[in-house]
Length: 309
Image 1: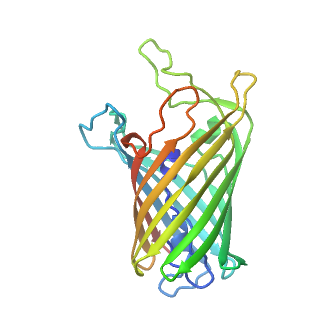
Image 2: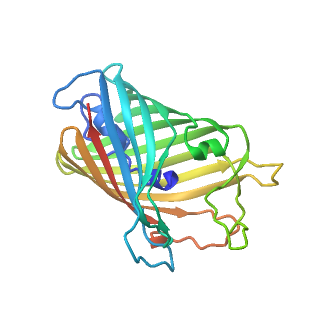
């Protein structure tokens, strides 16, 4: 669920203030700006992205749909005008209802991976290009990370922003992930069982060792309340080989496209209405055709930022 949810996190529709870069993740918006003139070094924010997939091919919606969300409370400290550190306490929550496969599911709450964040919103300029970046360190506090033997994950995030007109900006964003694992393979506990007690498919999977999400984003600021953002890029993953399980190494590439409308009705509160599509370009030996913007790989989302304290 986190993978799908995080796949809908729209890169920031952000109104630049002082030295801050114009392009940030959506969850940066509240923490990077002052609220009603406050300059407190400590702050508490809440972030949430709720999403819903289209029904899978051949499945029909017959009841209330389940909503998936990735949420966290962020405790942040301002080191200076351009730097922040933070501790994010994330969790997943699914509402009861019908999922994309037509199955009826109950509500579910689970802890996700707690992580520390260092943000620098002013790494300098190269000509008209404004650079910023972040470093995130994840702890294996989720059930999925513990099952896969994750020791830690480090994510580096870099933003290169070019504001080429008063209301327009173009950016390149790169987010490499580095995984440290205690094992190269694990069991996928999301695979169901048949009536005879056997798995529907092979539950063995190799663990990810490296990932890279990178994309180009175009932003248009209509005014101080509304902004439009569109992005296209790729999400790539490299997986270990497992000699014990006789599984080969693998590399997958997904084409990712996003469109969002950012709405900021008041200081300390903002939300984004978004639609996104993830199209797998490499599908292993499944022999599936590549299909862009089909119902089965399109999702809708609502992202919310709230300044709590």
